[in-house]
Length: 282
Image 1 (cartoon, rainbow, N blue to C red):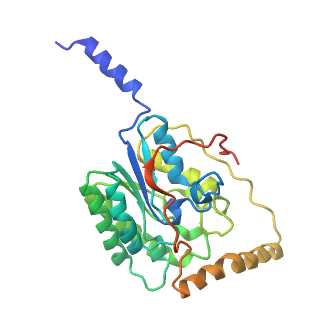
Image 2 (image 1 turned 45 degrees about the horizontal axis):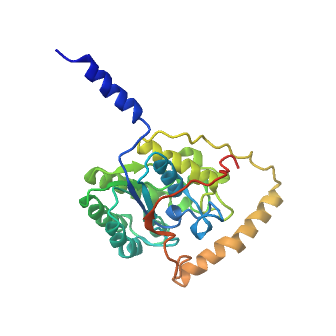
Image 3 (image 1 turned 90 degrees about the vertical axis):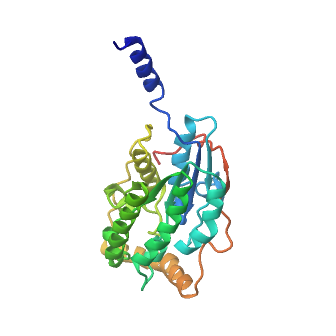
């Protein structure tokens, strides 16, 4: 006969720990997306916050011994992420790793999604062999943005390869392709390439859902689309091209990166404290 008091104790323990999670050391790897570029915050390292910081803030809120490192650096190709971040990540002995890599490779002409995936699999195999829970990201559906729409097919192929890697190594998939909310220019910064605070906030909510971690992050409502004449819209396009597109193209031609000579913003695993006055409704 089952002791009902034991059942009650088990249920009470489950309820008490409902907001907890099993991770104590989280490492983020990748490029500008994981670094947090576009989510400007003067109080954060490199002057950016980002979805990974936001996820770490939630995970750290219920764990006194939680630590977080962010090795991501803007502009990095997947080979650079593998060569410059993988050993450092393993050395930190994480039990949770997020890896978003290959996006900068996919949007380069002449690259092969299958070859990019082989490098991603090398990274994932090493991380999972060390027992970490690994979260990998699909690429966003770029159909909403004319500049990157031509790469939509390559992104879709790479995404299917990512899902195959995730299935093989039992990874969690953070599915940006399915996150339709952020497929909206209002969730992107002035450079039209990186997400702004609203976009990073929504990605953080998505990652926490994928991890099955309860949280109180609420959806953020962007301002209505501005009403502009055709002439005003074209003038904005010209300003954007001169200020962002042309420098980006020139860096590619010169084989330069915005992250050249930059160090990771959080190279060591340390506690993270949420901003004192959060501007989530900005």
